[in-house]
Image (cartoon, rainbow, N blue to C red; front, side):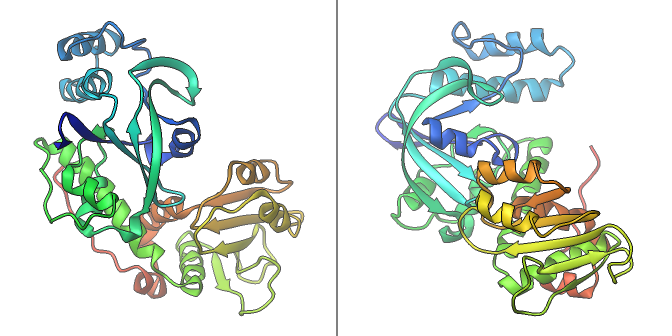
Length: 330
């Protein structure tokens, strides 16, 4: 959909789970993958993309190949300088909005894993929590690259809310993937609305669902131990799991991770839950810790809750009430 004369508006997802979002912002670009395809320079038509993908991945299903060709063609030829671009960073829960400033480039190594780029000047950001349900639903699509529409752009720019309803996908596989993606985002929204104390209770419920005995520590100085879990509930059997929970905006840095891991000994294990995500340096500190430590963001927590929800006790189900949805097997 056009958002003005000859100007379009695109959503480009930053890889699975948005793991490349920070690179997109830091390096002033968006990118797509297409392993083994090589440069798009000579692929000037949709048919050319389809033929190249057939050569590279002849065993792919025709539908998957058609979707991929459409994404590549839009990124290579239909996207223009001056177009609006949005991408989502799940760690900060921010939609970043900017303008395309360059033509297509084949730049292996500029962005991790993705070689095909467009330069972008990022101009503003909006929290997902500030947006209407209709806009969150539209932007929750699992498609790598699509046009969300003029009304969504206006809301991201702070010019009112988008009306309900988005153009529906036209095939069963895409509908399924989109609904799965949107479901994940809406569950994350619900979890994010919990209070800090309820977030501790949810993590304890998750650990109980995984077979541990877990409890939330009393309010007060806890040396980074908001939740404690072990096989026997007494800490006499290994592993003993100590959990720190930070439910706030803003990423956790390396100093907080160092402080947390310094309290762990021997067979201890650590979980650091930060709904605001982690800096790159914090992730490095977690990887190099002297005992196993898991850094869990809101996205990770949401996936784990869904995965183990059938084993949740009444406390966990009361915190995040979910309904089972059935879908026909393809």
